[in-house]
Image (tube, rainbow, N blue to C red; front, side):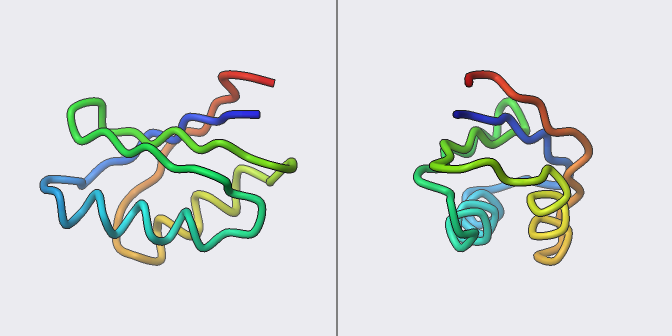
Length: 73
């Protein structure tokens, strides 16, 4: 299962690393691919995780996650 998270306020590789680290710390996240160009992260999951968990984790490190969509079941 994969979800795409749209993120505002990412400007550099350090920003992307912060987002990657906070998402990897969530139980059930297997892989994270962060794209500065697309202002988004794609997470591969081993189990269902509520979208609000991603939004809160990203907000907690100083970025604005404004949408989460499922891209693969």
